[in-house]
Length: 184
Image (cartoon, rainbow, N blue to C red; front, side, top):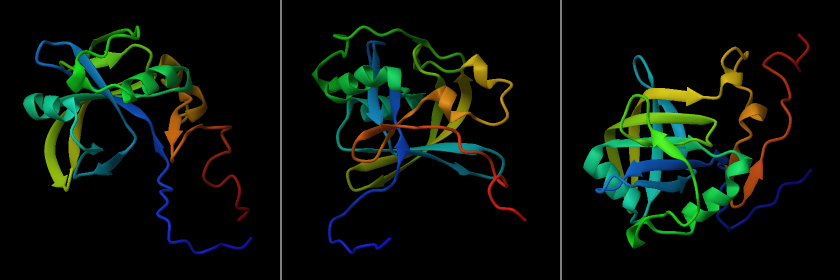
C-alpha cells in the first residue's frame, strides 16, 4: 500500500448523522441535519458537542431556548434526513413530508419517533468560531430502542446509523471487541 500526498482538503471525520430538533416561536417542530456531533468528558459527566455552520433557524431557536434534541438517523430515515437538509426553516415550516414527533420526556424539545437513539439536551456553553457555533450540551435524558437495554455495549448494527464523510454511508457488521484480535 502506498499513500499519496494531496493539496486537496479531505475530511475523514466520519460522523453519525443527527437531526437536531428545536421548537420555533409558534411551537412548531424544526429539524436540521448535523453530522458534526461528538462527546467530551467533564468532571462528572459526558457533554454532547454539536457544531453548526452558517445561518440556520435551528441556531436561532437554540439561542432563544437553550434546548435541543439530537435524533440519530438510521438508514430507514434517509428520505427524512435529505428532506430536512434541503429545506430551510427560515422559509417556513418543514411539514411537506409526513413525520411523527413528540415532546421529550425530560425537556421541551421535539423528538422524532423514528429515531432509535435520542439525546435531550440543555446547552451550557456556546463557542463561536467564524460562522460556526459549537454547543456544549448537558444530556438531560437519553432515549433508545428497547433492544439495547440489556445489550453488552452499544450494538451499532441495531441502531443502523447513517454516517457521513462527503456522502452517506451505513455500517456493516460488528467486528468484535477489545482483545478479540491481538493474541497475547
